[in-house]
Amino acid sequence: MSKGKLRSLNFMLLTFLVFSSISYSQSALITDSTELEPGWYESDWLWAFYVESFPLIYSADLDWVLVENDDGVEKFWFYLMTPDTWAYTTPELYPWMYFDSTQSWVYLFLDTDPLLLYDTATETVRAYTGESMPTIVTVAFYVLNTEGEEPFLEPLIDPFTERWGMIAFDMSEDVFYWSRMAEPDNTCDEECSPGGHPHYNAAADMFYRDGVFSWVEYGPEHSEDDIRDLVAAGTAGTRKAVTEGTDASRFYLDHSGLYLQIFETE
Image (cartoon, rainbow, N blue to C red; front, side, top):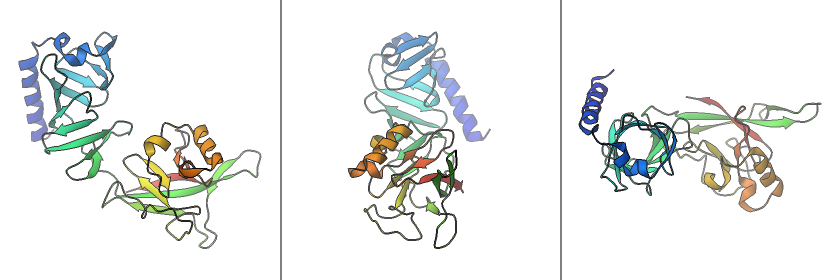
């Protein structure tokens, strides 16, 4: 364990001893939550957390955190052990949090694994734990072969180059990197696949065609069947949506019937 982490741990334990006399029944965080089972609560905004060592709690979202708040006042300072910083938020603001260590507001992408955050100070996305993210993401294209008894996915071979169709996204400049300007375009070159230009949002772990960026609207909460219906409809922006296939295979179905899969990261 590094000296910095050791100091953080010692500080956290010391603070815990100072505040341990506070009953968690006095906290607005607890009184506004539902008890799932002894020690475990569920909040409308913080999801599930364990409180037996309050004000040191275990959050399903944030890992181990220390809670400091005024009794009955819905504003909270958390000491986050994993990023090693004090953070401020409210039920209305979360998953926006203010990080004291960077003097900036961050946004937590709660649906990503691992948990990612967007830092407004640097306008970049990084892992909540501070771990580095891939610089290059290479995506491979597949088509569904239905000639046999059982359909199967096979690599898409470019008829001009006779090579497997792939595209590499460089995340070194911006994790919200798109392959090009997001303008609808029916032309294609070596950087794109037939049917439009692919775009990749690393924060959302999601692909799109042309100008559709709304991963909340067209993204992970839609099932594969939902997306197939959108593809079949072929109208307006919905036909440009690209979303995940089944969780097990991690393929992405796009509006032109192609499947995308992350082939390699580095």
